[in-house]
Image (cartoon, rainbow, N blue to C red):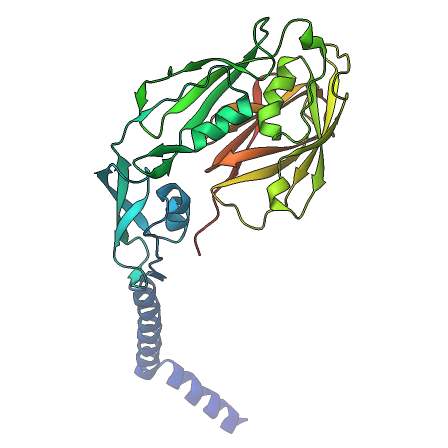
Length: 340
């Protein structure tokens, strides 16, 4: 018993000796060194490396979003040009392939067109032909184009349906290549407004406004195709061509759509949106905004649980706003495909 007490007393005295203080100081200093080292690694960690992509020759609007998402900050300088399109990247610095830190600046020289085009005369021309004419203008031996702005339909006793009655800017006015041409189009005579037009074979984007101008609710039945050239074309429709129609009637239009794996600058896109529970009954509309124009591409009185589905033509990045009785329900976006 005496030996045990003696040993315990000896251990107790060691733990309370100056050696214990030294041991605690050593352990504390070690912990301090470890924590300091970890903080130094975190604070001095370099940002991720990014390979500069090759963007020279591409459209700035096509690559901007991708550059930002990759961690590069584009800085734009403009150069006035007369012999090329607006918004083309003429040069870049740093060059492609260079490895830079995230948040590095990529300086881009982008074309700003100084050329002026004569607006062609489109009055009296059928809408699809007029749109094609605007796309295929010629200037000093090269092809240029003007965009279509707002297309409005009104009845006309003098002009057949889908014929352009007026335009703005007027023919002969000089405009830049970024100018959009607004068109006023005939929906036919008041009597013809009650007759279903034949739109099979036309682009859904060009015939939607004509059908809506006749007071029809346009519902699309989407048919997938593996022929990209058919995407957006109307296959058939009910009522048939020449049938009597009433304002508020439904036009069921079958439309081809090519499923996209990428999103090029110009393409037909499919929108599918299920109206969520909790929303009210009302007039649901889909408003498209892109580099083409701002326009309605779906309009119907609907209820929660029903699906909004349609195909539309997109140019550049697009914003799709779903509204109910003119109040915003959802905003969706489609961006141009990233560069490779």
